[in-house]
Amino acid sequence: MNPSFAVQPIDLSSLTPVVRKLVKNNKFIIAEWSMDQLGGGFGNPVSVGLYRFKGTGQDQEGRSRRWSVILKIIQSPANVGWVNLGEGNDQTHWNYWKREPLIYQSGFLETLPRGLSSPHCFGVVEHPGNMIWMWLEDITESDKEVWTLDHYARIACLLGRFNGQYTLQSSTPPFSWLGKQRIRSWLATIPWQTIPWEHPQMLTRYPKPEMNSFARMLVDHERFLTKMEGLPQTVCHGDTYPTNFMSRLLPDGQQEIVALDWALAGIAPVGADLGQLVFGAQTNLKEVKQTEIDTELYENYLLGLKESGCQFERQLVRFGYTAYAALQVGLFQLYSLSESLKNAEIVKEQTIERPVILECFEVTMANEAYNLLEEI
Image 1: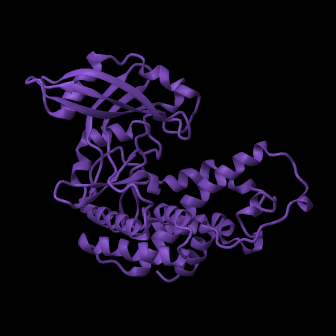
Image 2: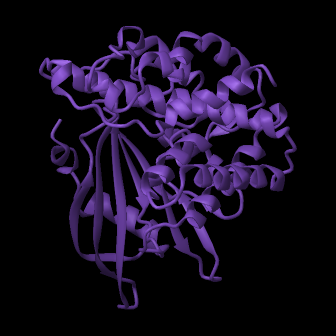
Image 3: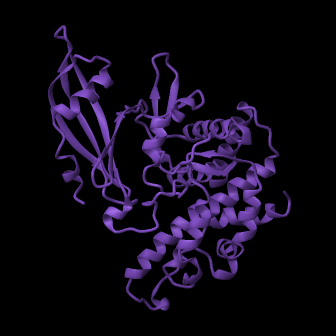
């Protein structure tokens, strides 16, 4: 579907109620407005497009003000021919397409711990053809500079607070739409059994098979999944790459982290939300040692858990973090590589100069997860 087609019906009659909620004035009149497409049409087929609407208007006393709001459009994956990707009625499917609007409508995001928030939602509208519009707050980031290690550490601490709120079974929200068993689903659908680990393109990321603990972990995955399912379970954001976080300054001068894109929220073991954040930080902070990033973010995650009232053995949380990170990040990387191999020309191995493998994230995580497997 052409993303621009999805917003053609928008006019003043549909935009005015949203803007009036935004400015908290039911007599506000829009004077002029424009639309910019920010993204969409790529990646997850649930996503149709992301748009910013902005303009000016006047209140009943003639005072003018500027406004802006974000429209996020989602759809059933079946609209573009996908099957078994969350298009059905299984609300626990990791990619259930209606999850994010349900989260906003539930009020769950209003319970986030101090210092962590989500964009305010001004309306959820279902349209024919299995499409949903979500009108969301346009977040203005206060810190335009490149994020430092301290920024990532603060997010890790807040994720610890968030996960800690729902670690105890009695406090798990009774929402039927929280995703479950994402890693099991990925293992059942991603063709990891037929990956050509010796292919030159695979060797640009992974060590030789006999040194590849991540490949061995895939074969042993049931041991790890069983152990992780026995850990304390919690509500997780589920998509904690750094691009899903913004920082803004509150009126009282305090910094607040805004978590975006809650479509993959679900139940997972304690520590699961940390892996993607560490992976992203290590990718972005090239001047900082990977071990330093790992240690700093892990310690801050533990601090957040403690601040929420949770006291767990360090090794238990460490296993949840490393095992889940290896499988979550690794399977996604594996899927991307396998897709690129489908279209790659067959190249003789001797024509490829193999790079020196330093530290592959999922291999490093798998190494440690193996060491912890029998200790907890």
